[in-house]
Image (cartoon, rainbow, N blue to C red; front, side, top):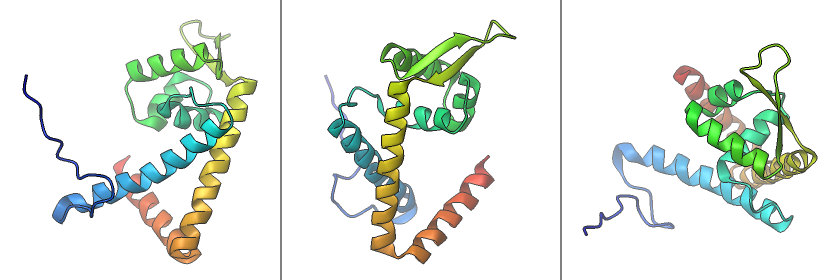
Length: 156
């Protein structure tokens, strides 16, 4: 059996040079948020929530109500969202009910447990935002958010 060496640099090393530096830096920044969220959830007994569930719960907490919205906002396949929703329902984070108008669709709502987890995720993100503002300065963080927003709007 052959094993492939990972092309990703080890954690803690300098980002690669050249055209892959930006993706590496974005990945590492995203990892800081994922770790902060995971730690916050684990400390409060929600460590069974799968990582993609973080984003799904946040979308549902902001008014999302069906799998189609999760597919669009998360940018993943219908099959991936279907598996995720099944897991979130099984773990009691989300309640799924048939849509009253179109029985082929399901309405998704946060359960009480899902609402608690979404609130914790929001707290962790806020804390991480405050940390980044402290590290960069509020103006530079605002500039970064504006630039990333501009880049992601062009991708849509």
